[in-house]
Image (cartoon, rainbow, N blue to C red; front, side, top):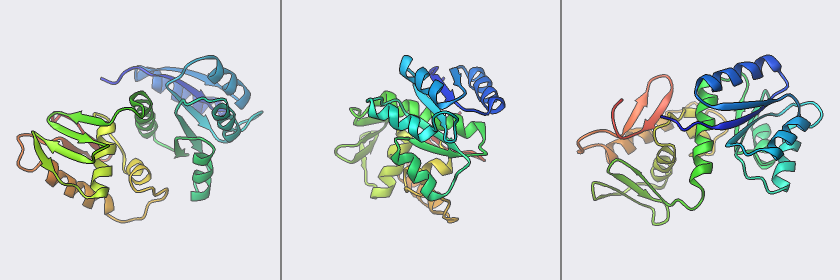
Length: 230
């Protein structure tokens, strides 16, 4: 079960914001709403949030300026930027301004939730975590080693990065877009089967010959690594 999060939605479209807040609440989380950048800054400064969801185009103080101001003051809360601007340069600007992730409108709520959960997990884990475990599978980020049931598994650099991302978000479905952006550093869809190929190779290395699979495909959604088939 996902741990409840405290989130701030900074969105001037009140109908869109109401939908997101309602959906997040139904998913078991707490969500506050600010309708402009200045209110968003005030909310973010006055309370501790697990993740901020910030629209880029906001009245009074635009989203990137809001994020920049918070970062300048030392705030490290993960930020997911929402924007109708989806070109590569737009995404790069958002990430350079201090955003941790970037989701283009229109979006599916399921993906927004997955990204927010991933950011919250990343923030909670912190930079100090160097070892991730799922069942009898273990990955050490510092030594770049992988072992399952005590047996060493040799991975190529990209396979290691893919496994690291999946295990950092263990139990959570990660979408193809999330993998392209966080594992391949692509902020566009290359229209290739690169993800399928690497997931297939990774699955053959970490699951083949063991009692139960850990890497699962969630049809129409993405992939998840977890201890158990359900």
